[in-house]
Structures are given as structure tokens and as C-alpha cells.
Image (tube, rainbow, N blue to C red; front, side, top):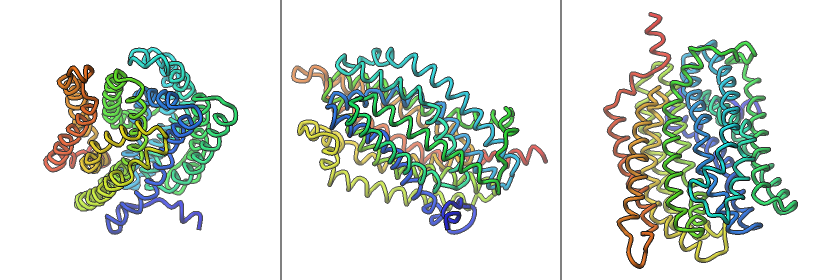
Length: 465
């Protein structure tokens, strides 16, 4: 029974929407478990240390996300290659891909640790982080970067498992790690009074455990690929392909994270109250987007496996069905936020002013989740087909040329004698406008773009022929 539970999903057969949903639901629960890392951190420091500690954790998040782009890029490249090689039943290509992923993790982890520790505090100072939370934010970041190897291994190896259609394993491992994280958070903060450093230490320990569990799972999947040391040897055609496919996605995430960092600087200028409200919104938003991103990840695996199997008609059919399911989930999310939003905000703070401000700003964002569903589902298909450049350009335009300039411009234009800093609501309206334009671009480029001709395995077979 246990082996059956951990069986990977072959998305080249069966009813498309059923296979997509079967793959998505465990991954969604797993993503919820992963989101609990940062959420529990926020709840614990908010309840046991105070609102300023909550703001410190939130101020650190954009910098952490900016430097995680190496892991994200390799993870997406691995998912695409693994899905297509699995769909083509290419055991050797699959083995070399996974082995070179592990090599890339080590390299990326070393770079991440050195760079992250070195620039954490200077970046926080550059972003005008208030002195009242600067030391806490810096300590939090340094500890997370020192333990980045666990985060790197989990993110990339879970990407490998997703590419193989196994979304169940990551779910089990993240649930275990999340429980450990919660226990350690309470122990280190409530028991040992370690403050924000305690939640950071709890997080890296839990992440390391989830990474070890992923490695153990891959070692047992010798029925579909070979997990041996010889495959760790750097092989340019595989490592280069992972980087080539993952680099646009990494750049996409880097641009997105950089825009958040720069907008965070604008948020910081309004003071601790807006910073703390933004942290609360980010935590609620983190859960709200999980179904949307889960369907996007599922569409990447679905498209990759079917492109590898040479079944373009099935890709088109599943794309439509996956988008419809994602839109249904996102509509449900909007209803939940508008109905129970204040109750969700009170999980993080008892301060009435913060709850009211957070809910006010969340109402602005709510409709954007439907727009985001369109973006994530359609770009997920493009990535699975091997076209990671088109989603990159959509994100570049959406975040760098729209969201970031609009935030500063709209805040500037609303400056009055009563609001000398401008209207803080404009920070969130700019995001909603950017999502709307991004959704329109995704629809057009999905319909008329060249992603259908990007299949990695198909192109290799043509070269051989």
C-alpha cells in the first residue's frame, strides 16, 4: 500500500483533467506545508516577541527571495528535462540529468552562502530598513543563508520528483519537516527566548530534514533511472541544458524579487505599521496563491511529459482543462478572503489598526488572483514545452516595466498636504494593474507563440536523424 501511495503519476495516459488534479492536490498540500515555514515563523515572533519582530522577519524576506533565484532556476530546468526524458522513456538521459542536478546544487549552495552572508546587512541598510528592526532582520538572514544547502537540495530535488510525476513524496516529507519546524520554533523562541534567530535556526533544521528525505526517495527509484556517483560528473550537454532552461526562469524570479525589494524600499518609507501590515498580507497571500502556483507547476510537468511522448494534441486539451480548474480554485480563494479575511489577519496580530489596514489592502489584491491563474497556467505549459524565454519576457514586462515604475509613480502623484508621502494604497493598485496586463500577454503568447516547437527531446531526435 505504501509503495502504491508513492507511485509517480504518468500524465501521458488517462483523462487529462483527472491526471492533472491527481498530481496537483498532493503538491498543493505540500506547498501549504512549505508555506508554513515562514507563516509559523511570523506567528511565533508576532505572538511571543512583538509586532517589530514580525516586521523584521518580513523585511528580510524580499532579500532572501532575491538570492534564491539560483535554486529556483536549477529546479525549473530540472523539472522540464526530467519530465521530457521520462515521457520519452530515456533512462540514460534521465540519470545524467538528475546526477548533474545534484552537482549544481552543491555549487549553487556554496555561492549562496558566501554571497548571502556578505550582503545581508548592507542590503537591509540600502532598503532603509528602520533601525528598530535592522539587527533582527540581519541576524535572521545570516542564519538562513548559512543553512541554505538544505533549502537548495529540497527545492531542486522536489523539482526532480515533480518532473517524474511524483508529487506525493514531497507532501509527506514537508508535512514531517513542518511539524518539526513548529516544535522547534516554540522551543527556541518561547522556551529559550532566542527571538528571530530562533525561528531562523528552526527553519534551516527542518529544511535539511526534508532534503535528506528527498535524497532517500530518489535512491529508491531505480526502476526508472540510475542513481550512482558516476552520474554526478559534470557533463556539459546535461548541466548546460539544465542551466539553459533554468536561466530564464531564474532571471524571471530575480527580476520579480528585485522589484519586490525596490517596492519594499517604498513600503519601508511609510514606517513600521505598513511594513507589518505588508508582512501579514504576504503571509495570507502566500497561502492564497498556492493553488494557483500548484496548477502552474502541474501544467509544466503535464506539458513536459506529453511533449516528450510526442502528443501535442493531448497538451492542448489538458492546457484548457487545467486552466479551467485553476480559475475555479482562484475564484473560491477570492470568496474566502473577502468573507473571512479579518479572521485570517488576527492569526498574526491582535492590533486592531493592523488588522483593518491589512484587510483594506487585501481587498485591493483579491481580484488579482483570478488574473494570476491565467498567467501561471499558460506560462506553466510553455515552460513544460521547453520555452522558458517567453514566460521570462512576460514577467520582465509585468514586474520591471509595469509594477515597479507604477508603484513609485502612483504614490508620487497622490502626494498631498494630508498625505505628504503619497497614498500607500497605490503600492497594491500597481500590482493589480500589472497582473491584468500580464494575463492578457499570456493569453496572446500562448495562442500565437512558438512554444509548440521547443520540445527538448523532439529536437534532439531530429538532430540525431
